[in-house]
Image (cartoon, rainbow, N blue to C red):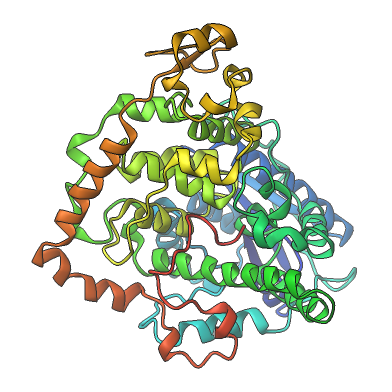
Length: 525
């Protein structure tokens, strides 16, 4: 009997799963997840992503088993797995969610489409977010987003409602991270995967933590609890965007009657959920921005001056700027940073260290548990000044520490060498007199090893001078007629459209333009 194949990707749930609902409406089905060796060999892949997925798959498998079915997990390239399955048990329909991933998944999906045409299999894809495939114009895009997020949720299947096909093949061992060639490191304090944990995070945010969202998300001290912490669950699809938006809307109605301050925090959170899809739409519409400058007039700006020693110092947390190195240490332990600290890291990389966004982006993609390609590459280019349409965003790490860690609690927590340094010197330890260094037991010198308990590195460059020189180089290029002339086409293709959109939710969900000071990776926090 013909059946439908449900291909799970970054949608590891049963609730509000359009592909599963479509398959169930047409009779028997089989559920498949493919572990693709080529995907895990990419420079943006990390063990923490794989472990989060495995944790989510285990819970998904248990949920399907409770319904009388099975999740088939196979290792191999997708077209090879489809060929094996089709030979054993031909299927007539393939259903899945759309994915806006990296270049490899884009090419893989095109290969799957060719495979389906060659084998007479109908492939139907459904939107995962408020992202429009083959979008012709940004005009009224926000209305598409609102329509997607306000549509009724699809309930998860009840026992006895799904008709599962007999398994055509025996269970296959799941490869370890080592089998896939992934780095052995897994942040010990990262969030764990699975829908039940995602729901618990959502509940804790809406019941209590959202009250601290406004005013709490900028400091690395308060942000771990003030931020929603839903981003990895949205990235890997244990929760749907629609259910998060609608749950937030419901809470917002209640808060407006009891707490105007908390309500404004949720308004800001909803705006970031909108931005989440706005940035993913950029990659959907222009996949090349993953590997080349969005504005081609900036080609060659940093590429020929790349300094590997600067990148190594940044990634090892030995730049000499305490707030930067503390953030790198936290990121390595937790797989997460709040948006402002992410913005600061990329700003330091792009301006005083003058590093190209691609190499920095590959490193950060592996460090961020919630790595979402559309947001990631769009924001890296925006922060590095290569979109051609955004204002220059430069974050001074000393000022960021003064503003968001005024008592140096965060710096001391993550930089053990500085714990005994007096407050008056801790943000600029390279200025300490030798007598103070001796008194607090820390020596400031060049080439200090990462993590040393009694040595602190000198900054790689003079912060003010290097930042000023970098901005001058960027702005001088930006003022050229050729670069200015190409800006309009980018705005037309990728800019937001508040003035043209009829979306009734736009007052809180549709931002004015990309030039609003949206900090890096703040969609959502």
